[in-house]
Length: 229
Image 1 (cartoon, rainbow, N blue to C red):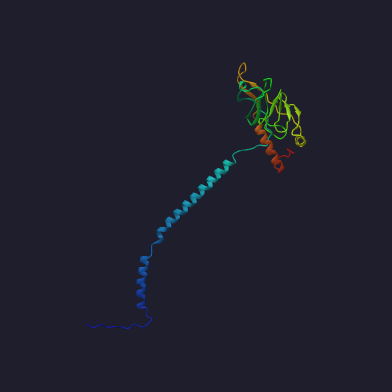
Image 2: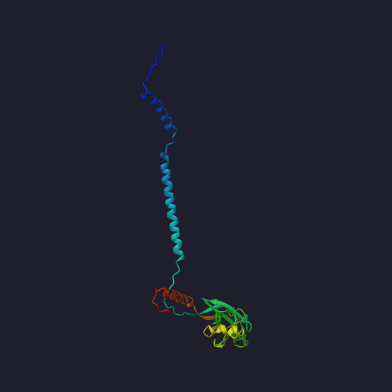
């Protein structure tokens, strides 16, 4: 058997095309098909958009919840109501005091030395010192524990204004207008008394205070009718 060798001209491209075709075949066979990734990417994108929308909706609901409270600047009229205190008169000894908050009103219930029941505002009109923190009851007079201001428990009438300590007390009294102590009507419940103590309070007091507060804020910004000032 005889073999015949044929010399191909250089640059004919026959020899070079075969290996390149083979390599292309191997390369195409080895390369993974990327078409399956398209649905996966689309699904991930959809999930991301849905999660973003859910987060935005959650934040919007929280924002609405935080601003759910509505305030008014209208004039709130008093609404007087007898409110139970949970305290019985028999539980109070003469000159004893008990503080309680009723419908936003800080009140102080006590008895005089003559065992007469009374109810006054718990905050001293000077600088708001709680009278329950050490006030003395002398006869039918209650004395503030901080600066010694004294008031009648029956009428709230001012007797002495910031008398102690010497020099300092009177100086602090100069910067605040003299005022009487707030007085509340009180009674013992039951047909013949002897029951739970009730106090006549304004149940709209807290709303009226907030309305007055916001009216001042908005008036200062020129957003209300300006009548606050």
